[in-house]
Image (cartoon, each protein chain N blue to C red):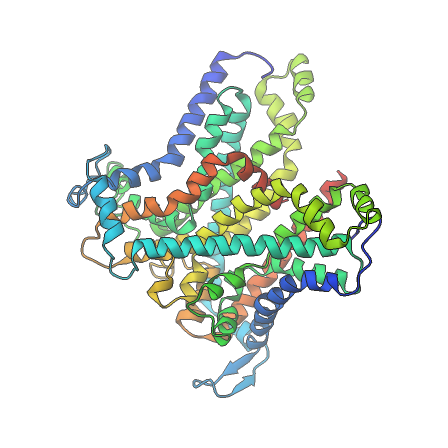
Length: 294
Length: 280
């Protein structure tokens, strides 16, 4: 944590400067997080008049609850599927754009703008496409003998949210893959070409290994995105249904706490998610530091 | 390009065209739906060519309030305000704290840095209930303050400014001090002008971030006068009618997503710079 070589001499001013940020952080981040931890160890009586300390019982009950364990499994499936699909497609598109010179900007623009589509809107758009009475995709699927119904069929509902969430994330991954590829020195590619390596061999032996920092960074960001930012996608499409089939962890925190008013359990779930984000952040920053040296 | 391979180039274009079609398709269908009358989509098959009802649908979205939502212009106004306040607030508080952390040495500096860093680890989704309770206790439900202030603290913007300030030559600050400029004068006359591009890039990213907010406005607003567009279009789409009026809903959806999309398209360089640099 360095400062400048010389600094301004000042007593009160720096405190004044950091005060707005620190105050907002304390009131709206640290305090609520502390409250979540506190109420995850407590039970409130039905009228909210008295609370009693119950230790780890909320956590124990969560991990014995088949619904919660199932939600962990679904979240893993969802997160992995969205990460793999959106990163895979984005990598293919970035490789393709990176090969072109004149039309690269046009293609980039056409591929980048979905970043500005919010998760809710992405959800509504795909809901409309998959809608069983008017949507175009069920109509096409019916030719392949698929009777699409995401309102009854849990697998279909899961596919719907995976498609919508992946679609929205392609442009983000595309941008970072493209930026990563453009920083690969062209001389390496040329040297390999002179030695007789074809485009595919060059990609797998030169570009792809050099992209690994970007890939790793995107992996973390995408896990974060699927676990938390996809709330809007789910709320606009399946609302966790049918029969809990798409009730991923973050949506469960919301439904149990805000709608079901089960504060203790919801707080315990919040704390578990916080631990997960902290782990992701630590991994990300340790890795970033290593990359700076590299 | 290293060598000329016409077939590979053709294949590249083919891949990209397919990619663009996948990316554009959902929005294309929404656009088409918004140009048709109410009966075009009931039949089970979506038309794929534009109709002639776009204007009527837009007028209907703008003039008629749907069940469960607020008037469209009011929600657009709320979304705009929310995005602008979040953008301005985040930039102001993070540039000030980055300035303090880089250009001063004071007891508690490292602590302040870590408190700011922690915000990265507490996305609003994981602290829904207690944050809601804080805002409710402060009496900020159904207000612009309640909508925006809890989202304003930002570690990423602070880090971006901190990183940028570290690259500003030390000599500038030393020269300013020799000439007798105080810290705030240095900040205003030298640092702020130097940060212009960074601020602009951040504005683009943060405006989009603010415009997209969904969960938080949904929690803190019960008064339709404070509904935002993202909530509004969701509520319109979720109405359990026998037959939702898709043409109107899609017209509203397209209008709601237009501002940030236009920003990305027309300010692409700032957008790319902002995204790549804040996320590092």
